[in-house]
Figure 1 (cartoon, rainbow, N blue to C red):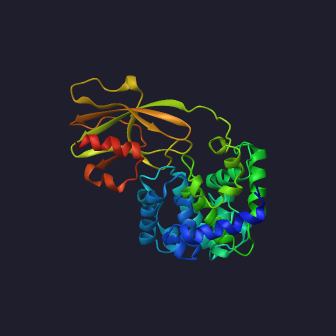
Figure 2: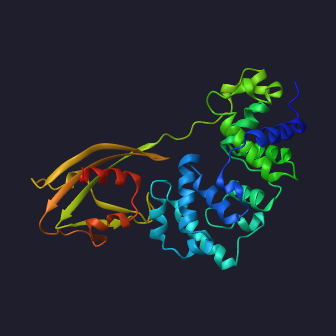
Length: 335
């Protein structure tokens, strides 16, 4: 059994040459296109992210185009991807890049862009500029923990330091782009979370987890705090072709997106013109579970509402970026 580092990278690169995914952002060294793909693919599956990447590249072919757009336009184009702070950070970072006069090409400068952490900076730096820096994401944790049989929890400070150092040690400095992409693809296609293809794996003979029967036990991740539940009640107010919406404030979920009238459950107007459309609609976020009731109120005179609500023609609603949950609820208004 030889799980030495010197065997790992050459085998991985050979596997990648034969099995790597053909993705459009890999056909370019344009740091803008690569950065855009990395931001979109955070918390997003490849197939869904691919469509959004093409949509953004078509609408904003350069970073200058993205920087010049309004935040509303960026959020509308992002609608359906979730984690909307990514879109706001993307927009801000585009403006930073324009102010710099071009895309930064050192790791330290790339990290200064809004919303760019260690992983994204390493991916951009290695792929666009061939910087010899290793990426560490979920795929990397999984492959390295299994191959070297490391049971240090990946979501601890110790684990993050250990895997970052190991990933950097394994990196062939003359091929950082191909190696990083190979490691990510290997985790996504070969060494998958469930039912990994161990019997067809080119590293099977030297994989410590496979040798010791621990593939299904690695990587180790400590349990985190349970998600909290939050109940929300919305009323779609229809008044002579208009409806009341507001932009969600800072400091809460969906900052900058639009929503219909939000009320406490006991404040829903009880009258014949108000009817329940959907109850306890479940929407799962990273740290909480939302349960939402949705009402329709059809009235002939506009009710008094807080000042942050705006009366919008119903036919213009598609010009306003809304969270996926609200998008689902709005479907029931016209059903």
